[in-house]
Length: 115
Image (cartoon, rainbow, N blue to C red):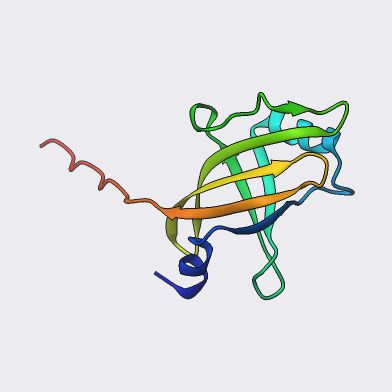
């Protein structure tokens, strides 16, 4: 496992990475699509990742998008530098910031074709 993936397995600050601006409404649109961009802010230049949400591992019920209050917790799988990982984190809607970390996933080898 490379150094970046190893460092991101430790809980650290993240922000919602939304364009053109980070607002609760833009975050809601991303959540509704099931795909959220976040940025780990403490790496050199920041590390931005796209997270495909896993509904069963996410709790989006704490959000009040209209008032920009509450917190969402979400998880999703991705591959970073050829390493399969799962992101775990939360974002506070008032600040559009929170904390997150990666968990290295074990890949299940594909079954050999039947002969």
